[in-house]
Amino acid sequence: MSRSTPQDQSADATPHTTTKVSRVERLATGSVRYSRLNGFRVPNIDFDRVVVCESRARLIAAAYMAAPITEPAALPAYCAFSKETGRQFDYLTSPRRRGGLGLAVEVSVQDPYENATAMMHDIRDNNQLKVHATSGSESGHPVLSDDENDMFRAVHDAFGHASIGRGFDRHREEAAWLNVLPAGP
Image (cartoon, rainbow, N blue to C red; front, side, top):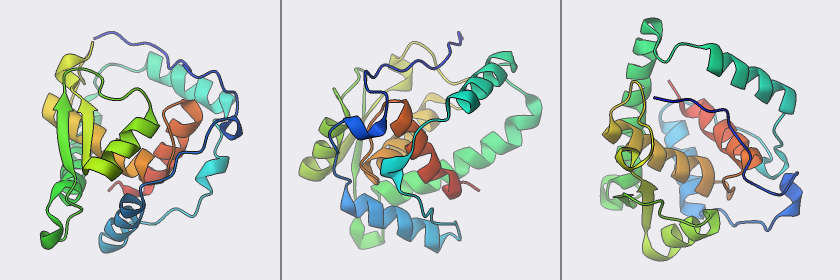
């Protein structure tokens, strides 16, 4: 498995220079509901104002690059992460009549969306979310199975991006991370 440092593919330097993407309201309320039902803190953040701290990002990238690919001491945390991701995925995809959000998730061998707007339209208009298959990407995850990582991608895109209306550049990924951070065990 190769590692690369995160690179910004976006031309915009601040989150305020791009078109606002409307959040998917039922995912926003569903995310809050899940957090409250499971005793997780609901973040009180203006996600439109989140900007990456460049110095912190460089420190995180350096630590990531220096770390071993796998660390035995981290395996219990990955196990807990996988279980929690599975619970969130079940909530996301279970039918509404059973208390879930009823979103259909499809794993695609090709990157399914040109941008976040297309993803959010697909969720709103077709009640579906497509995720790029881990098995179809250039590298898998060193600990999670392909299926576990695909579930995480769906949870991250739904509750991290679509629930707050943020896209995929570095600032929006930071906002998505801050949104799902409290939802962990």
